Picture 1 (tube, one colour):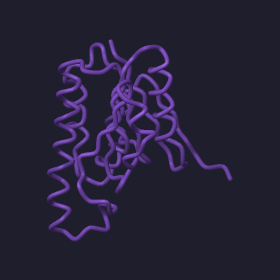
Picture 2 (picture 1 turned 120 degrees about the vertical axis):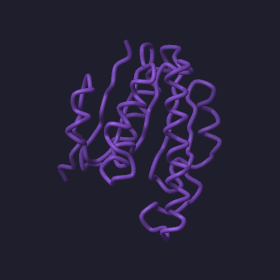
Picture 3 (picture 1 turned 135 degrees about the vertical axis):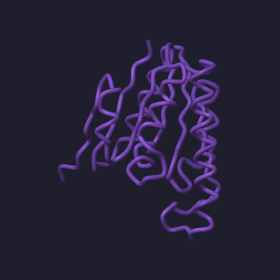
Length: 159
């Protein structure tokens, strides 16, 4: 059965830690999908990103380069649809077993900001994670999601 890890906390480094896990998985011959939410431009298209493929593939469904919370309301509604497309993609990936490691970067922020209910995220994760490890990242962790985690790492800024 796939494991669920959560990287949470107010410190910087949650996404790099998740990407490091993807690199470690790739070094073991496994594949990873990295899906970003609420990141604005996120990890931009680059030659480096292309060199990660096919072992690690990065996905971003939001269309705006701006931070979600800086968008006018009508643009937010469109981005919520794009976010839902990203969650549906995650569900499909889990159901088909398309990769060995699925990282949902800043997905906890979707729950924390009321864009997605914790129960809905749980249903996505239950879509068939038998053979897929999952990493969730975000600043705040909803108590309803604690029980699904095999491990939780809190990342705090000390200095």
